[in-house]
Image (cartoon, rainbow, N blue to C red; front, top):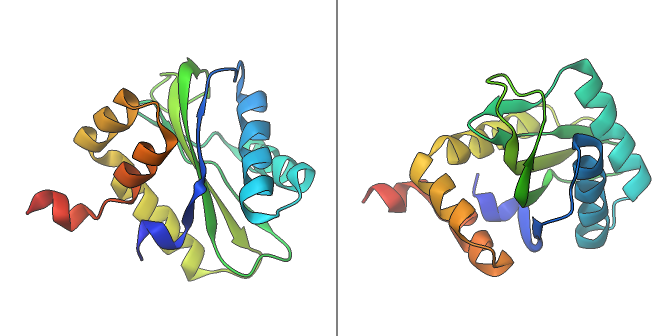
Length: 154
């Protein structure tokens, strides 16, 4: 699964005003609305409901919020880089400045898990995260996040 199959360029944002986890989740939902036509309130509520089950901050400044939504046909993503990290109750207690949110159809099953694994692998790459944090241009960030991992190794 290629990253570009789940992430559109218009779903990548640099945020300077996210002051809390709740605000960040709403900003992600708003971005999903403008990029994919998803209802922002429904998406925001679904992300918050998932966070209430347990935080999706995976460590090293990275969060992978995700939710299932009725009416979606495919798994889609939103990626944000934060100018100021926010507390996300991450596993390592470090604030989050990179968040990749996934929205999946209610019956996505294995596709949702494949997408989550793909995103997780990409954001475990320390060199990639350094590049993402060093850039403030959404187009450049899109290129970095969708870069094929195999190409980086070669």
